[in-house]
Length: 376
Image 1 (spheres, rainbow, N blue to C red):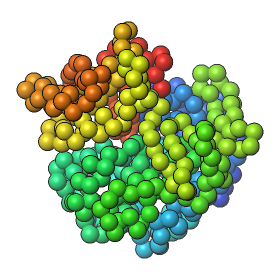
Image 2: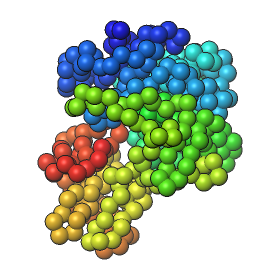
Image 3: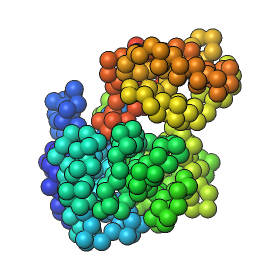
Image 4: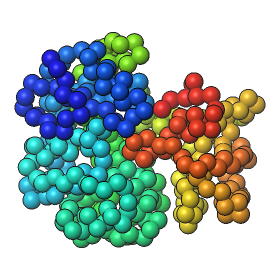
């Protein structure tokens, strides 16, 4: 069987299989050659994990099961218009095509590179009712005080945690934000806040979609939407992804309670400084709130330290000494002594994933820190 490479015309009912990767990836030539070494599974979608170390083999049926559950949750109708602003080589973009197949709504692929003002204009002109973004894009919209068009009835935010502060800012500007949690391995989201949450301003809870059976300790999920297997790129072999009972262990720190998912943070955010456990997610949200008026990007980063284990530093894409110094001073006044920012790093451009997501590993590599033990 020959894999169709980066072909967006997916026939969801055929036995043909598709292989997707970022065409701008520095190793794109080798990724294309890799197609010849992949195992042949009929009617499957082959998608890379975020660090490109593994490929998820997902059946088209898994995508369609997920699509039907999401469509039901969002009360999708044929008259809806969904703007795809995320790449189709990523599950967040490709899953929208599966939802379109199931519900018959109109899909518009954004023709512009990310620009908040252009995005708002496109939503308005094309009367878009549904769209998905990542938190960094929502941050850009709120930073420029851009209001939501009236046609938009739901803006699904996934790909990373969303701070309550940013959520409130977006809602005040009229953005109908729904927060979601999903993975490539689950063919898109497994939990999302309900449409009814838009009737109030408080930070919403994420309810599990009807396809997910879950357990705690460790947090794991069983579903018809799960991947078939992984392909290890380095070892060039298939590896199992599910346990003997068909459950997939979630890579993030999560908790299930009363059919709701509580996102506690990524594994990479679980750190200790001087033996003290640090809530990295909470500190990152604090920095985001304090930096709301800065025009430059700032992120918190945990770097290796021989004495402390880890230490917190700030990375920014511009160095206005006075403003950054005052920001760090404010931050350090609000945290415990071992949680204080110890250094500032300025770079011309902060490297991110293809979804414009900030990742600890990429930033550590950019600053030439040892990342052997870091997770992406």
